[in-house]
Amino acid sequence: MPGFIPNPEQAVVDERKVRSCLLSPEHAVGRHKAQFFGALGYDQENWHRLQSDLLEHADAQARRVTETEFGRKFEVCSVLTGPDQRSADVVTIWLVPKGEDFARLVTAYPED
Image (cartoon, rainbow, N blue to C red):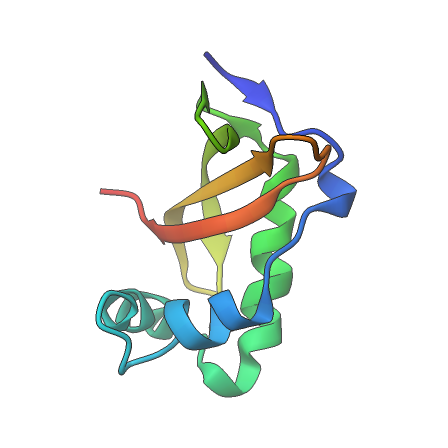
């Protein structure tokens, strides 16, 4: 069931998530994501740009909301335009932990 992430202006995209996973060519899982985001013009030097761009996705409508043991999980698919002005559909997964009223980015990846 679709819905919106509560308090999107308070959403958090952790620097470590961006630098050490999404943009790391050495990360066991993230290296493939680093290639994808690199093709849009993102790299570890401009990690803050990807962080900022992903935060903009927190106010888009989620295509799926599910309750988990950790809290409410939101799946958002929207267009991400990188520094090189190339665009791609990206899925972002957000979690609003139990007892909190704002979301944290769990991961981001290309839409199939």
